[in-house]
Image 1 (tube, one colour):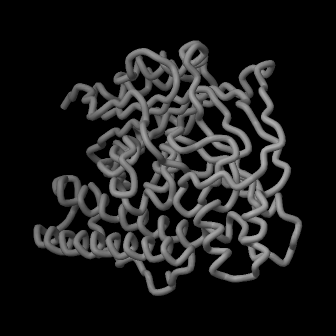
Image 2 (cartoon, rainbow, N blue to C red):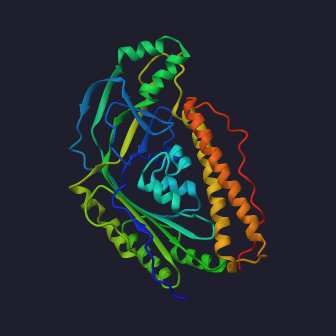
Image 3 (cartoon, rainbow, N blue to C red):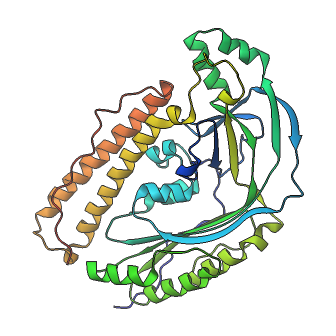
Amino acid sequence: MIRKMSIAAAAAILPNLAIVPITAAQEDEIFQIYDLDSTTGFDLGQGFDVLTGAPRGRCVEVQETVNHDELGPGSVSFRSYRIENSQQLDKALGISASASIKMGIASASTSISYSSTLSLSSYTLNYVVESSVRRKGKSIRVQDLQERYKKLLASGNPDAYRRFRAICGDGYISEMPVGGDFKAVIQIATNSQKEAETIGASIGGSYAAFSGAASFSNAIKKASETNEVRIWSFRRGGEGPVSITADDIASSAANLPVAVKEAPSPLQVAVVNYLGVVDDPMLPLATFTERAAKIRLLASLSAKARDQMADAQYIIDHPSQFFGQPADVFDLAAEQQALANFRQLVSARADECIKADGQCVTDDLLVPLPIARPARR
């Protein structure tokens, strides 16, 4: 049966806060770059909390602010790729670990709203298209911590360290790169395992150049002739309408450098850990990895449960695609409820973790085991 492409949603600009480290390759203990969906509360020299991705007070003495107007775009890129799970989706949309756990509660970000409504089961084909333009923004040179915060750290009181982090965060924003981003999430519904393999093979794994935008568009249009295709699109920077068709996606991806030239937006923050400012090795300042470890673990558990729920719901909604007995539906519904309760527990544990300044128990958290899945036809 032929189905026309259906457009689930489109959003012009991602408002509000949602931050996530870009790649594992940038997992540095002292310096990290984070995607930024809103500039509200963020500025050069401001503190940054890695547990929540929120801005904190200005606690450093800025020696100099440097403009880099002479530097053009640092990078212009296009790529499309298949995603397999919710963690990959949240990373693509720039959703922080703490925000992904709460899904729509911790932030009013449009990206979180769409991510929470997307059912990313292993039975659908899911792709992300990304186009980005980056240029170096203003940066600062920092001389030292402000004297009052140096005294707070030098007191040696554990409560003083917690107060320092509450006021100043874990590091300061040293630079804010600007430019533009265009992202689209594409979901293709398939009717059987064989069809999923066939369509997946025809689309391929990735298109790594701007010239590949048209090729990807053609592959998606071909898939939409026989299958339902849904598209969610997002943009930061630039002006004009939002892309809602496969052709629009190709055009937006290819024309992004022109679109953002006159209307660039702050897109990222470069954060330097205060370990790079103070020179006392005895101060118990944590690295970025140490501070965020528990929250990231909780986010991974929540994402795993979310994907398992999506698989169960897909089987309930498409029973004709599977071999199995009608009674399986009741077991699947019970599994979904257990998973929903588990995600609520993880969210509550995340609250405890943040209130306890990153110290919380996670060893007792185990994702409920799935019931036996019926074979797909």
